[in-house]
Length: 294
Image 1 (cartoon, rainbow, N blue to C red):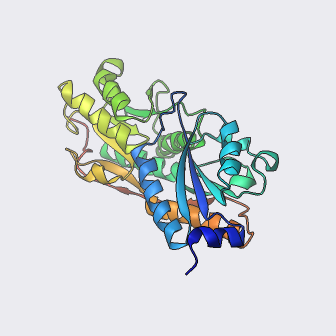
Image 2: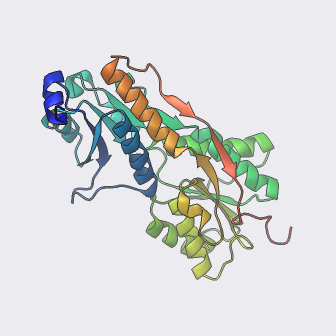
Image 3: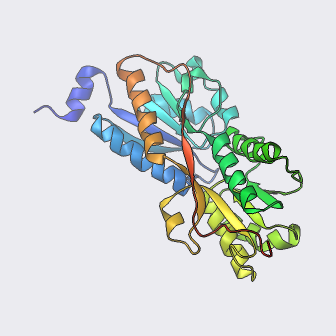
């Protein structure tokens, strides 16, 4: 039987797909638990289709072009880049190599890929908290002017207040990066910075868990004093104490959809005209309850 390398040479195909993720200047990969889960699902689906996944950290945009050509990639999945970066991908820089950007709201047709319905997910989270009687709800997440995903989640969060006719104070925002460490710090300072807070919506589970831990170490109870909702439904959200109420996005389907779109572009020369938006839902666990005294 011919080897995979011999077959690749004969078909002018490397059978290599690059998973490109942001890296710091110190070359440390910026891979969250959410990104790791997507990578695992994408690798499995690529293996089924006869492709191999190679991980590459990107510190500068020019490195995308370098990776596409120096590795002779058949295609690339962009994960964790903000829309401004994805907007700059052109035929001149990418050449004929198909790309699929996950969680992107860029209008760049060269990088169309899957994303969750972030607006609806955040609206579901806020509607749940409002239905319990919460009014002083903090939105915690990265600077949302830089990333379409977070902007969509903020807009969905705000829409729930508008739909319910409930005023929301613009100052109830915590700008915090998506890490457990920053969530921990946010949770510790939250009661001081927002004395009236009774609930928090965090834009990622890892951030929500950090916030819960920070609140608890400061002497506050979750959910008796402050309810917390996350976004992702990563595996650990079921095992923390209290179990995390969170927006479920189908991460497996997201990874599989990115692979299917990319393989179709490679093998059938069919590039999708638009991103694919995947449905979300809310799972209610132990980290949310009506505000104390209600």
